[in-house]
Image (cartoon, rainbow, N blue to C red; front, side, top):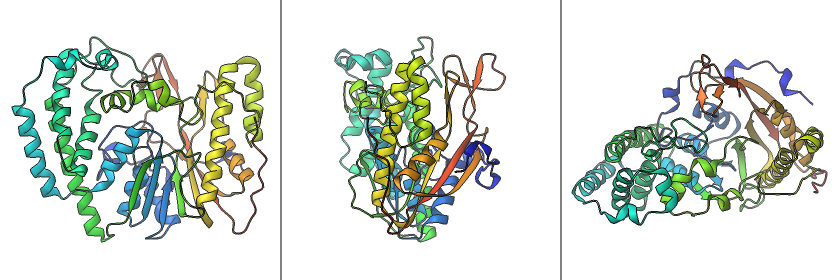
Length: 430
């Protein structure tokens, strides 16, 4: 089996010259989202490995990049994510609203916000976790906007407004700027909620018009697009239902999406207990058991090494790969024969411990029954994604003194489901 580390960088798939602004066409810039793949990459995969009218699945739907590109290129699509905020963002990005309707609704909403009086009781009756993140004046202004949004009767319009509201929350809070960890900054100058909401709504309105215009100009029609809350470990789809899977699993020891999106989770009332949501994520650290057998020799060797030195990390890594194997089995089940799966993943490092995600993924796929056909190594563009973090976990630049280098490359693993082959994987037992 090919060792991904020995591959040369494929410049055709690296998109090195693309700037961040070029990745935000159509609805791709509706909402900030960590570690999302660029739309040009997904579009290239979709066009090469599927045909118009076929069904594309993203089992880790995230912010909906795959679904937007599928729709823009005439493919049906299905997206799943355990995170309700991801579902909200993806739905907003893929609906497409008649521009004149949205413009009219915007005018009504903004006039309503302008004419409404802030209640002194807003902050007094606020959720304690929201009080933790918002100063009284900021909270009160946000509550006014939020209440006006919830009065909207058109479900699509309301969805777009909620997405807009979700996107401005961190800027209006005391969340430490650019930090991937939930840290407070009491000296931070928060943005004025109504002003920043208007600005982003104006941006989204223009991008919605661009999205609708692209669909009309390409004459791809109104292909179906379904984004729903769901678990990649148990996909609620029939056997052999999809023609292509394009997805990027969450990285082990990387982003805690429930933590990152907690402001939106709390505002929309999805739960008051963030820890409870985290238990539903792939490889959650809440599991106490160590899974020795995963279906990958490399993963099992890594887990055995970690057991003696870093028990907590060993438990986390073992559950991550155990869960990931379940996800890949479900992908095998729902994919049609002779069709392709594309996994986009990078290797990681945690406290100087190398975690070879790409190699382990190839072993897991082969063990399940997939035929790994092509592996592409691509360099991540520094124009879009900085490879450095500082001691607090914030992204930084090459000139920062206390910096550490993280992801520089990622891999595209293309695997085919062979026709008529009986899956012969090792049993993944604890």
